Length: 365
Ligand SMILES: Cc1ncc(COP(=O)(O)O)c(C=O)c1O
Figure (cartoon, rainbow, N blue to C red):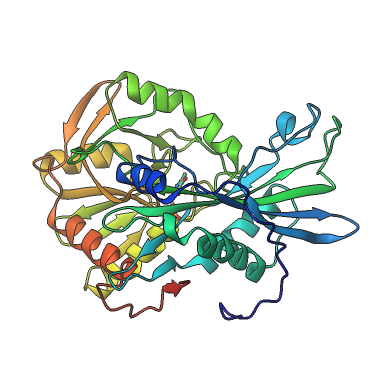
């Protein structure tokens, strides 16, 4: 379905007090990450009897939830993270939104929730972006979009809910990491794992993040920017960071990244990086890589670069790795050439400065 084909009717009650333009401009000066929100939100309800219905583009406001609402107890909740970018010519685009819709439904199935038609998901996001287009920063910033859905039954029995609320909110953002972070220092989770085979690792459900917070706190306590998890069976294989996938660049020019075996999130940035690296002539191996190899290869020089990638931070070089027994540097600890090339290529495509050969950019405004 094209962006102009409106199959779904969104009620659009007028906003009673939209943010005045000077106040919005001040908020866009230095929005940080996830602290500033736009004027509107989209909500759509689902019940067994009616399916998806009651789509509304309305003013952003709190939910009124009964204390027995199922999500508050059993965490039947999923979400997505995507961005709208302002292009050089002033337009606004999304990056591969249909991939977010597909992953949202994979998460919904894993969590026993109602799936949503992909075109409705994308239209909900587009509808919010159009309404709040003035909130899309220019320059380095972007509008972070957070579609999510949660179990809304008022019931304390443990079963899949028979009603859900889908919602999209938006937050203008600057960089994910504090300004001046040249390359990340990563903490290797000690005593905590994120996901097991057969579990929910590949789903974007809130519980995965709640379960990772103690490890993230451990990382902060060791003065690290992010945590990297090892596998839950052997505590040996590198999986992913708390909110990003990870890549390794070897001295022979090949790239390596952990395979999608059900325990890590299939990142859309990860998939895009694989394609861009192959376009640039790199061999990319989706193959297990152990922490021991990582350390050994960094020390021997066989490993030249490492980087993390995801929608929020795009591509961020990893300079140093700290673990319970010590630490090691990746090359000279600074962002490497391949990392910088891939970052420039990807952000160039997202902002309309580079040829979009793969047709990833989806124009909204
Ligand atoms: C656990 C985790 N891994 C990887 C990613 C990267 O996924 P994407 O590139 O689709 O943003 C994210 C988040 O955005 C994440 O939360």
